Each structure stands twice: as C-alpha cells, then as structure tokens.
Image 1 (spheres, helix red, strand yellow):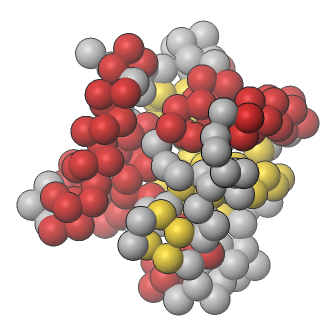
Image 2 (image 1 turned 90 degrees about the vertical axis):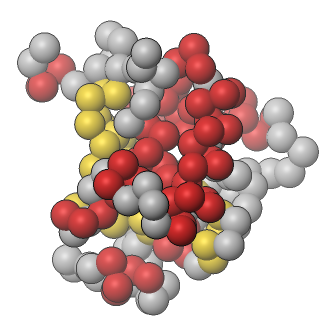
Length: 179
C-alpha cells in the first residue's frame, strides 16, 4: 500500500518504551516512532526531556492504515494501555514528560479525539487528565530508543515494567492484535 494513504497521530501515555511496544502489536499499525513533542525546546535529547524542564512529553508517532484500523480504535486502545486519570505520571514514572497527551494534526483528528475522550471519561470513576493539543513539532528520539523493548528484553525496566503492561494489554485486546 502507498505510504501516503497512511495516517499518523502522536500520543503520549507514560514511558514511550511501553507505548511503542503495545502499538507495534496492533493490527493496522504500520510504524511507531518514539520521540518528544508538546514542549518549547528545539531538538531536545532524552536527557533534556528527562529533566522535566523542556515541556516535552515522551510520545510515539503512530502511522496506521485507516482501512485496517480507524483512529477512534487507535485512541480507545491508547486509553486502554495507560492510566489517563493519572496527572503527570504512569506508575513510578513521574513528571510532565510522562503525561497523557494526544497531539492531533488536523480538525478531523481533534473531533475524533474529543469524541473518544468524552466516551472514555464517562466510563471511568475519575476524570481523565489527558491533554489534547495541536501538534507543532515532533522530534524523533535517539536511535537507541527505537524498539527499545524488543531490543532490551533482559533490562530490569523491560522485565519489571514493560512486560507486565504489555502482557495485560495483549490479554485485554487480543482481538485487535497482529496474529
């Protein structure tokens, strides 16, 4: 298929290693690129973003085929893979760089995101804190962060944090995953 027919959306839901690992398993997702967005600093590095002083969040740029998976499904899966009610944290990862954020590229994406957010919010006991903003600039993360989980299965963070989250995601959304 022509890559121009793919759509992209930028999402942050905690550590980008976890979010990337989950999205790579969704049927219809063609690529997932970790990076930084939502802040003011130009060309931030991982170490810059980890300080919490850049305004950027750890995010992933998800490229997907809308004929295989619609944006509203992508967003519902996104909300299912992290806690959108937790402000500026996911588990032990704390700071604005770990905030829940959707960075849309056009008004159509914004409208779909607003609709899904409203639906998700009604089904949760606490209000969601997910930020919804227009994407200005996406900065790809350094190469060593690409497919981090797949390349670092033996690292403690992957074993203790990413694997349990990914296994729970797989169990919950088995019908949406690549076989």
